[in-house]
Image (cartoon, rainbow, N blue to C red):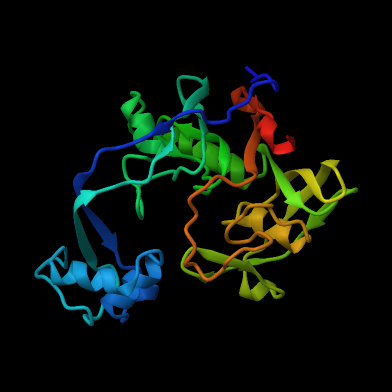
Length: 304
């Protein structure tokens, strides 16, 4: 099944969750060993100031396996941190999750934006995996991910064997996928960006000149429309690095118009909230051996 290009998946309603208690578990990675607890929390959740973390520690809402903690407690690799919130208030998200194509072993869903793929940060129930679970699709395996601010097609496997098969196909470049983006600048001919990508800080990434300092990355960018100031482009990622398309568009001098991190007025400090949809959509997915062939058009108001 191919979704008609006339379909427009712009959100028309929102999903609001009543406040609820929740205790999260954080696993300290080796690279964070030795850091002070409060420094680690501020770095990982940069949208929450240190003063608020100190208040939560004082209220005994944060603890280790064996005891409540102090702000300057040093972390150890693979240590568990428990973080309790008595009344979680999740940001609202578009109420537009849809199943676009489904078989016995997999499904393709439409993810609106902003919406995270899974639990993390400020989100738990307003996530794609939680919402799909509430629709009867529990235990799905995520095959590939989209940023919270990116909308579009997402592939899930219904069992571990199918997930491994898809992951192998992705690693062997046997999957055709593409994105549409609305960018600042005029693009008139196809360009290929092959600049390595590395982690800069927290969830922020950056391009780097040396391959030894980053992971290889390649994106094909093709023009679809331009008015001389902005352009609609098709992006085909050859590799699958975090934030790859957003970074490579900026590297090409074509930043996504409203990207809060990598856009024309982006703030790469990690302190800006990514709380709105950007002009980037996962728009096509094809895996011939599995009968997967789905494509959607960009929202009509992009060119309005």
